[in-house]
Amino acid sequence: MASPIDLRNPGCPIRVGIVFMNSVTEHLDIAPASFFSCISRRFLQRAPPNLVSDELKSQALDFEHHWVTEDGKTPARLTGNMKVLPTNSFADCPPLDIVVLGAYAVGYQVSETEKQFLRKAYAECAALLCVCAGFLPVLAAGILEGKTLTAPIPMLPMMRQTAPGINWIKRRWAQDGKIWTTGSLLNGMDMMAGFGRHTWGGKDSLVDHMIRVGYWPERDVNYADARTSRL
Image (cartoon, rainbow, N blue to C red):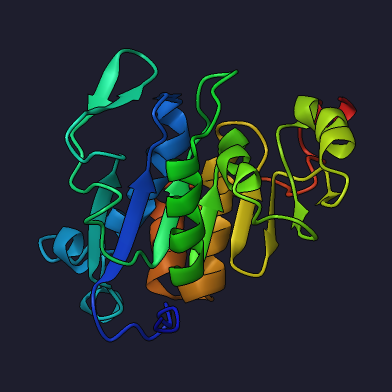
């Protein structure tokens, strides 16, 4: 098996995979995946210079988006009665460089087929981004033992009891190696800004510019600026 791609110097299009379980996914959880489009060469090639300078455009990257369901035929179900047409099945999906997972319906039991695909995707990817309770299928796949993770604040007491082999911390988002996790829902936007800066950012970079002009949230990672800090 080849080593994961170097996201900073990929040398080829970066494959982003939004992976769906056979359940209903919270559509806000996968919204952060749009970040990759806003720093892509395809999106920026027509942007006027008053929005993005030619110098910054030179930092743009190529991305391939893969929308992955088990059979590659059945549309993925999202909250709000939305559906996504898949581009790939578990069987024909190419190795993914970045994997995005959102939360699914409470009570859904991840199948062994789903677990096997997640183990494969984790081994091949350079980054696994789990938004809200999107970490649960990865936990079921046995990948997270010994890691430091966060989760939605109301879930933390339960997770500390049911998964004591994980270091659970109260933060908007957390990183442990290539695993990124978040608190509830919209904290995925903060995480994606953090992931972008960590991977391609820095002062006066394209990522820095697009985060600012796009008003991507970068709130205090420890919830110090939020009422939820009292939970």
